[in-house]
Image 1 (spheres, rainbow, N blue to C red):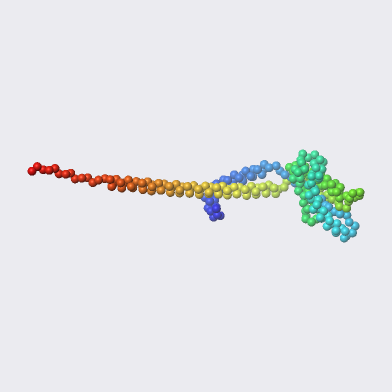
Image 2: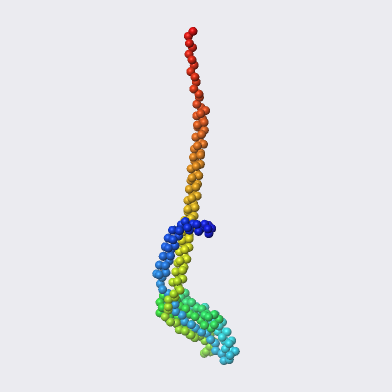
Length: 247
């Protein structure tokens, strides 16, 4: 079906399009309203390396920036997730908790790490974010401290503590737009189905009309020979023979 054909079908079946799109959008909008709210809380970490000179400080900053890339996957690792679960007594598995956490290097190529937690509870989102930051610092200190030494050169500190979670206003807007797009697509599909069925019905009607005409022609042809036969078999009436008159 071309675009022009679809436009013609949409004008012809506009009522179907409106009904299907409206019902789909109403169902999607209701689902958005009934969805449980999600709250976001975030904390920020900074990775630094101790240095004594300006040159070494510059090199250490480069090393810290590269170290951030290796820390990001470690923050949501099973070991750190289990530490947070045990500390807070969460009824979650490590994978379920990891699904609630988003870690990013913001701004890019800086020694900063943003930890964002999304949870149905604003208070629990804050607790998870702060506990995760603290537990990761302990974990990073342990792996960065050389064996046999009491201190490490790479330090991870909390720059911003998490606050009570706030609802992300963009999520309902995004879901509403998605519901609108889906409703338009469903309306278009309904129009396409109606157009295909109408085309099939029209073709079937034309075939039926053609069959009726063919049947009538066949019936006429079959009757014509009988008429001819009747005409050929009917003999002309004979004139009566006059009786012999007596002499």
